[in-house]
Amino acid sequence: NAGVTQTPKFRILKIGQSMTLQCTQDMNHNYMYWYRQDPGMGLKLIYYSVGAGITDKGEVPNGYNVSRSTTEDFPLRLELAAPSQTSVYFCASSYSEGLGSPLHFGNGTRLTVT
Amino acid sequence: AQTVTQSQPEMSVQEAETVTLSCTYDTSESDYYLFWYKQPPSRQMILVIRQEAYKQQNATENRFSVNFQKAAKSFSLKISDSQLGDAAMYFCAKNYGGSQGNLIFGKGTKLSVKP
Image (cartoon, rainbow over the protein chains, first blue to last red):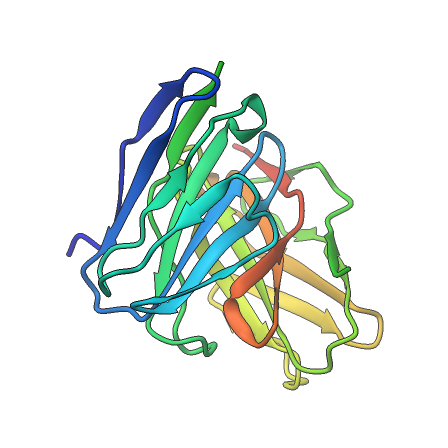
């Protein structure tokens, strides 16, 4: 089983460039999440989705956009990259929002903005 | 604002010994979930143990157990019979807004295991 797949694994961007971080899951999960992890810190929620066509902001949404056109995919878009967006980005999914449905994390994308 | 605090940036334990990692949190919610996640150097986030706030019984998963003190807003993790593979960053997290995926994380505790 592939689980949650994130691409790319690493990326270096110049200030002002844009890019899309891809996330796909093959578990038919309704709930998907994007987190960022800054050096020496815990994860912070950027955006989440409770199903296709429905997205909502998390704790740190500024500078990012998301879409959820299918159950499987939840891409994260950076429009004008800034050094403050240098981080490791994690995508996660779960079948439901209940405790009996744990989060499945991808392996992360390390993004550097210079 | 809700916060999760891990006051121990680093901890060390001898192999086969027991270690306790501390976590406190602040919330006005009465029902919520608490989690401990492990992050080895591979970077993958691995769920270690979880606790529902309305359950008074402390959660246990094999060598991992928690001491949940709701009134004190404390949620510590005890690792018994520590193994070399337990070396990792450990993050305490709490959900908010009713969804177990909307999480607030602490800054983590780096656990080293000495052979």
